[in-house]
Length: 569
Image (tube, rainbow, N blue to C red; front, side, top):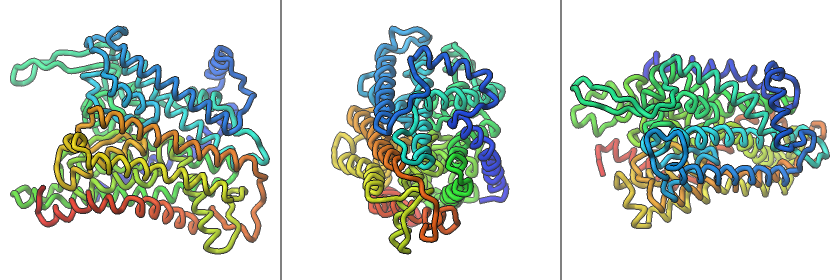
């Protein structure tokens, strides 16, 4: 580790911190229906959308109707995206002449982009046409992100309202998330990316002559616009197979900075927005401080592990002073590579600018563990916030048991109904990850797809299902995932990780909204203090650690000790 590396990391995190309040206040106004600076321009467009769609913006929905609307919208998006990929050969804007995407891969990709996972079992530049990239994948980058934001807003309203039967209107919330937040920011970031050199063209490719005189065909397309929403919406799916390690997606240090900042900005600001909308800004900052501690710890451990180097490579005569540079871009080095990796897994983004499969045992363990924690650091846009609230509800209940006080959170009593749904939600992730990983570790066809045998091979399987169920999308990349088994099971994992999780969360929202909001008393455990932040950190770590430690011990932890002993598999 170096001082300049920490300065780079610290400066970027400071920029994110500075953006949290203004962006959070803006989003609070948007979702509260207040006028914003963009209302004169976008207001008429919003009204036109409601009129053409037959939406009554004043008619709200109960939690069940809101959830069913979200599910119906997601199913429709899945079907449309699947159809686009299967009919790709007959659709326009296909300069490369790509054929139909195979059915199992189309299923996997549809599940991936509709759930905001953006796991990619394909090379984008060799499989997807420009039309599919734009009308299919980029559209879902907007809509899946907006859906997550809408759900988070519905959960937030549960703490604002008292004895209410409704939590909002899904169609209105999704429209506002798209129009007032995602679209304007995407335009700004797209322009910045174009200025920095990212392609934005309808051309399919260009032929270049290399220094050796050979001809090389370089794929082009509308890259800048897709990269912008990829990061702002914490999607992560890249235009190219190499993702943000490709120079057309991430050409220089400034672009890399913008990539990481864009990933963190909306998700972090939504936590502040939660405090603003519930009338307790201090609560928002307490939640932000808790996730910041965990994220910075993840960054620090990963940075240390990668700069410490690989003893196996050192024993072969490589200079250890450069640390472990395998799989990393010399343009970014360990500091910006490990920062990107920790952020993308603390979020549910999934984009990478270095290859996680080439990290050391501990360096590869941390990203996996950050996903195990529930993608709440600060998580995907929307999904991170409502996931964090679930942990806060659990923490309040535990605190009540420990000190004998009434379990309350922001004026709402936490009772058995909320706890049952909260436990149902948090058990989804380990059930899906561990069950599918165990089956894959024993199934010959699944084991055959492993790139590296031994503990790292188990890590590849475990990471794949962790990433899928956690709706992250990053990969160790040593696993050949484009098979019928993995396309199907990973697709199912993504769907369960998104929808089986959010249904009980919305049930909690409906239950809390119906309760009377009560003022705090001497018997109320305060949740806007550093003590609660520490408790929240502990609950997140315990749930992530206890549920997944045995599997981690068989994979990356064994790999770490073997590496330290100079052993290979």
